[in-house]
Structure formats: structure tokens, C-alpha cells
Length: 95
Image 1: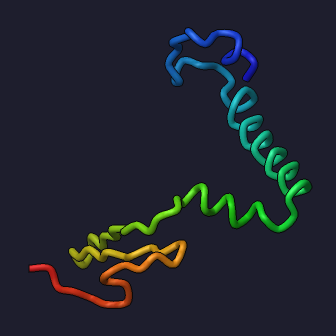
Image 2 (image 1 turned 60 degrees about the vertical axis):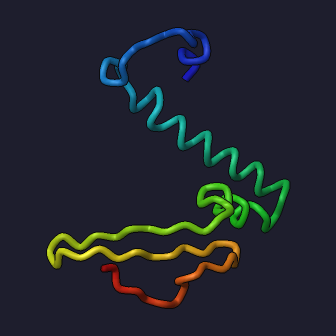
Image 3 (image 1 turned 180 degrees about the horizontal axis):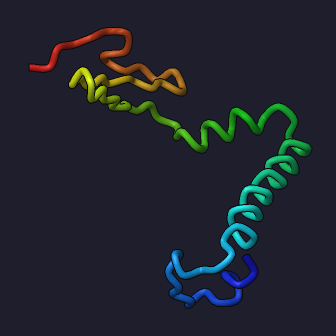
């Protein structure tokens, strides 16, 4: 990954970069895991909840789930922080 830091103006296409496995696919997740372990060592028990909150966001959202075989779409309310939503737990037919 050092080459990315040294050449910020480098405009290479991802498909043209050689040896992505050794240069990116292995070091990036490894660095991420090391950083999570370091944070967890400093902040016991806080990291999992904060990580999920960071990845999912602070506000509820809706997820559309399609079932192509049945030709249906479900809308699922994701309520992370206990924020109330008007249709949570209810169903409504779209017209």
C-alpha cells in the first residue's frame, strides 16, 4: 500500500494493478483487524457497539427486499437506536 501514499496523483485503473492479492487484498483487512484489536484493547466492551453504529448509521432506515420468483417486494424497517417509526410492526398494502 506504500505506493498509494507515495503517488497520490497516480491514476492507474484497478484492473491494471498487478499483484493485488499481496498488495491490497491481504494487507488491508489485516490492518483493519489490527486496528480493531488495538482499539478493543484500549476500550474494552465499547468497540462492537460503536462499530455497528458507525457502519449502520445512527438513524433508522428502510431496506427493500425483492423476491423475483414470487414477484414481490418487502420493505423492512431497521430501527437501530430505538427511534420510533410510523409503520414499525405494522403492515400496509401499497395501492
